[in-house]
Amino acid sequence: MTGICRDTLRHDSQYNLHIFLNSVEGAKAVIDALELTPDIARIVCADNDENTVKLDGFPRSSTKDTVRRINLYTSTAFEGCDIYDRDGMTFIVSDTRKRHSLIDISTSMIQICGRVRDSRYGEIVHLYDTLPYKDTALEQFEDAT
Image (spheres, helix red, strand yellow):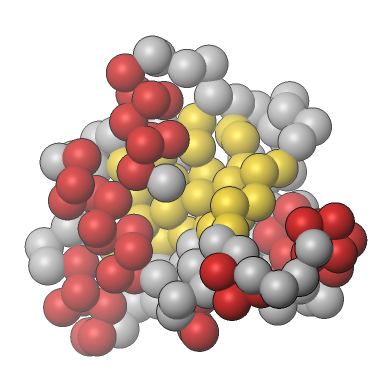
């Protein structure tokens, strides 16, 4: 995920990244690894003391704030919010090493797919690790998701 963000910034891509990952730590790790600032990136997560500590000074954003080149969302933005960005490309990250960051395929993924309302891009990228499913054929895993 960090590589995708780096490439987007380095090559001045035509699109803005909207990354749904349900991990404040994961979002902050991307911010830290790339030394991103609030004018380039934002993190949308629940407004609570625990997340404030995890963000360690990086400001928490709302879906109503101005879109940035890199937009990172936790489950607080998976449902019931509208994001408008004609240049928005959606990425969904399922980190199988962190149980809380797995996407509930039956409900959350469908909801996430509709968050960026007016994007000119007709594709959504799902990044996932198949390690726990190593004995499952790729076609079966893709069919299930």
